[in-house]
Amino acid sequence: MSKKWITFTAVTAISLLSLTACTDNTQVKDAFEQSLSKQNEMKSYTFEGSTTLAISDALLKSSNPLTNGLLSLMKESTLDWKGISNVEPLEFQTDLKITPKGSTSPIEIPILIKDSKLYFNMPALNKTPDEYYAIDLQQMSQNGKSALSLDTLKNTSQLSSALSNLVFNGIDPKWYKEAKEPVKLKDGSSAKSISVELTSKNEKEINTLFQTKLPEFYGYLQNNGLLTADKAEQLKKSQPSATQLKAPSKMVVAIDDSGFIRDQTFDITFQMTVDGKAQDNHIVLHQSYDAINKATPLTKEVPKKVKSFDDILKLIAPAKK
Image (cartoon, rainbow, N blue to C red):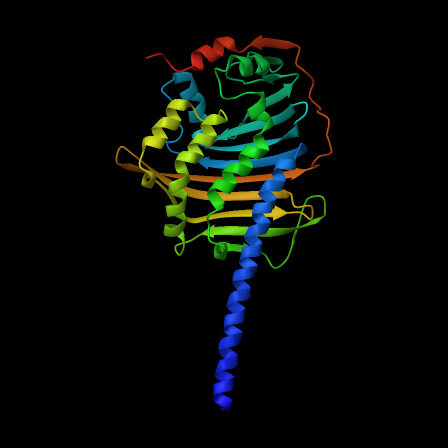
């Protein structure tokens, strides 16, 4: 009788532990999804980040020589940035540095959005560091020729949340993990760390889910001016299985006590097959946010030497068929 009782007790304990683990994982996933929704409440913030790219022609390639030249600089490169973003009114500044693989001299591109105009200096196009090109975002929004507009730029946080929700929503809670110890943020406060890893154990399952969402994913990018209509259509027509996430890959976010994502890292390996040829890609992205909803004033001034970007846009625009 005692043996039966011991066996019953052991089975019950194991069952309870399994149930608790499942519940805990569900709570971890819920906390992550709530943090994505919370990002929509970010109306101002400072940010800092970097990314290392190893991207194939299948993803970054254009038929336009000028556009292709710019994209080729980024295919194998490291990008660093730091700036300020305010939504109402839309104000934004950043200093972007692009360091192509093998180079020790970064290409520095200062960017400013103020009074519905986007200003930037690009060494390959501008003659001097104080000469800037300007794009009238208000006019661009009104003529409707580009999906990139004032509204889409204001909705950057919403787009990021929507894309993350799209990719991560259907993942089984058991693949979500919360670190036992909180992490320290730059301001000294603590945050919970949540991660999702792509391994040999879940690679097939997550790929099946990811591939069903690819057309919608490309649609989001197109509608927000981050993917041309031609490129989006091309990607949508390709077989979903032509894009495969590969292990090891990982996503880690740090969520503060207010529920905001303050730090995030994506280390993603994926493969794209074009014309029967599989091409590998690797992206490591890190981004942090501070001073959320504190309306940090911009430090950059509107440049005095400004040229219209219309002539350059004509060169970048796809050729008529």
